[in-house]
Image 1 (cartoon, chains in turn green, brown):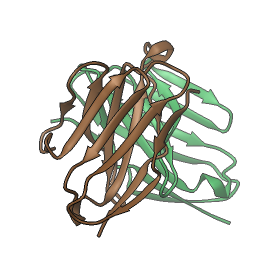
Image 2 (tube, one colour):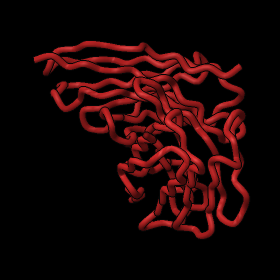
Image 3 (cartoon, helix red, strand yellow):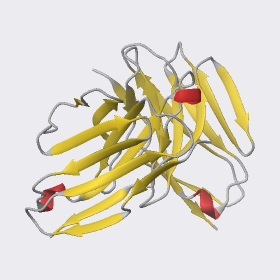
Length: 109
Length: 118
């Protein structure tokens, strides 16, 4: 079967750095997405990785290793507004998006 | 990024009535639209995929006669929950892709619609 694993919940301190991991087992691979979702709102796009390596976008970076079926989202200089759920999603060989359950990130002052 | 608008954002209805939710791509042609349902503290569950001008493809376990999806144009898809019951209460979210964003496969989400069935 297809599976996306990410931690259920993480806690970090304002101003610090946090890394949210995602491992996947899917039938084929056509890209990995990270989305941010605040409670009661729709997800918003953060990043898209299709090749191995690190993609940096301001305070957020996303890394992909296709051989290991592994990605992480790195958030730097954490702010209180970063408290949200972070969803990892993989596009499989049929271009279907397989969603992880999301990681709830709690930021403490 | 692109803008996808979903309406209404909140709707409360009585059991047995039907509710229509609209999803519009405002600045690109959405060849494909997706409808998701999200229960509290759970991830997105894909309900169906619709391509403009074609019948929607429903995920296993989703009743096509209960959740009617229409994608009549490149900018509009609608989801109608027919004969709604309290267990249909959920957060429904649409997303769209296509047009100039087709190659990246990037999805743009609507704001979501919270349905409460009394």
